[in-house]
Length: 192
Length: 174
Image (tube, rainbow over all chains, first blue to last red):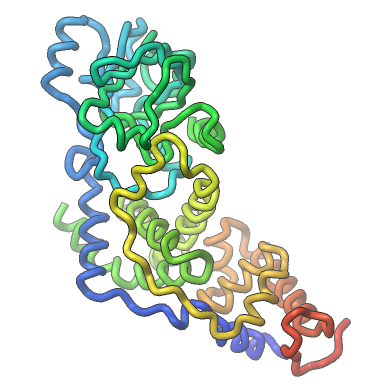
């Protein structure tokens, strides 16, 4: 069998031969969805509590979450006492996590232990900062959608987590989780 | 920005078709849809870096995204992961392999050999494009392709293969 016959035989077995084309509206939606994700401030699955950021930045006098977006290069010399993140919306559609995305999108990442869970805020004692300014602790506001964010399981005091954040909000979809989540530590090691 | 959008809108339909088929050949429909979205996003964000033609480059991105997707499947069911079911992907019709036996033969090859054959026969790529997808040299791509074809011929010629009825036209094996 020559190369061309071999190629023809393989082509006859191509699983994509049976793939139906996307309908025009599906194609349009896919393109729109893609382009809608271009701007970090629109269509983002995570939101920053801008008003609260301003208050904390002034009141705390430290680098707080108001300055998170894209500012890993502008980290201050002195560690902040606390960084506050939000948990974002539960309406995110997940795409599988990948190190390149994590490296490109996360502007803050840390390993930490939960020290308190109260009033919709989970507080972490930071053990290692992968990216961003070092902080002693990080708070994540999960009010309103803690159940969906936490995957139905509440964070418990003493639990160890790896959390990545972008634009002031923790990233879900496999980019944050308990430290023993299979593959997560490797993902962090690859990305940072 | 409008110029960017225009360029993407012009380029995306063909790219989407190519990458969808690429993924349909390698994974299940749900994963294919997720990885397609991820790949498009990378293409959109890096529109200025896209070579011409963009398809082999996009295949390279899709390959990496797929490898990560497959890793992430093992990670499901933990904290945060249930976000994924909030907006479940619309299923793409599952492809029915036209020749299951040949697919089985491909699966028996080493993954690197099978992949280079898929790129050659199904994606219809030449050695230089295969080199771009796999991020190897053109010489290495040529060599891999040559070896992979030889191994496929060997497999097809094996009398004890599970699929049984595939015969080579040449008959003899080295």
